[in-house]
Image (cartoon, rainbow, N blue to C red):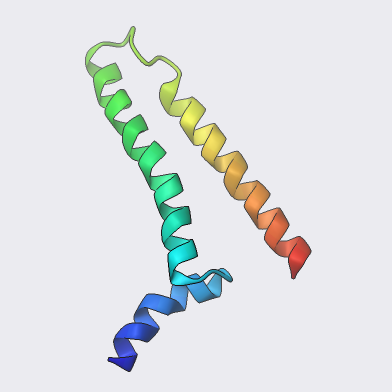
Length: 76
């Protein structure tokens, strides 16, 4: 059981988050990525739809990730 708990906590701890904080952060990135992937599948079939959706989502998430890293370094 302790081994399993270590597995669940190792990565979140490595980024200074609890398991639940990490879950929330992962969902906050994963859900927009999932929705964007659906939009991109539609875009592949109908190129006139969702023309900038994929790139806008990637840019937005990248900016969030960079900002989070800067905050993490500043607090360290």
